[in-house]
Length: 338
Image 1 (tube, rainbow, N blue to C red):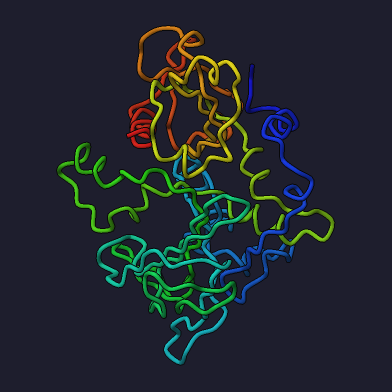
Image 2: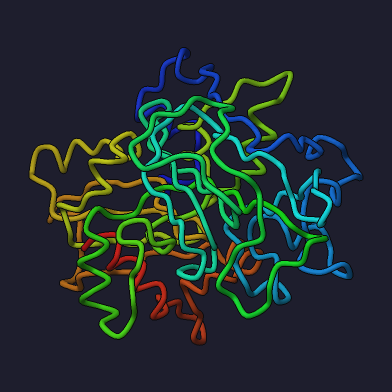
């Protein structure tokens, strides 16, 4: 059964109540710039990569390098500057939550100085990230309220090309958290690389389209459900993993589907639907009697239309008529299930 393509079937399986479907999540804009609502004025909200580039290069998705480079956040343009032309906009917590990490050393990340905040909405953990700050006003462990000032917009980064004053922005992400064991996975699989940020390395945070969430959240006619938003992601591919005890299952238990056969016989693995950015949004337990072959990771299907629309993460590749996981795809699955 193609469990990921029918939102109605998914909602029936997990038994979402009308209350859950109508829940209003408290996401807010992370700055005073709300020009996202102004159709035709996108350049007042987004900071493109250069003046001759489209505003979309500052948005989420396969928007750079002719569609082959992923950008996991929104680059929200500054509105205020000081006499030297430096941005002075306050950066605000997008929702109630707890500060999990503050990187105060801009040279340690292409994010520059950045903050990560944990939010729990409808039983789902979402992690907001605010990057390129000139200053952070909070420390790890602090509880924050939606709209609270957490820092000041800046242009910090460790990249060779500095962010120009004219495109000063906050890079804003909304993410799922991949694995509690990320640091150990990183040390084993990337022994020659530094991990200065532990669990809060950007590789351990898979981005969602914050633009869609902000627009849906503020729709005057439709209530927004974060759980429903995750459940209704478009499937890029489906994989089967012979793994039964990885942290994502507990952290995102509302995304785990019901399978009576696996309940009766025991769980031998999981069938996982991934969107094009590698976000696991539906996980079906499978009994041993439902699994063919002994391979630890199997690619079961690929949505070719979605691949051609959003190829930049390069998780799968086609050889002739056969699809395979790429090295990046295999690494994503290994990191998830480590």
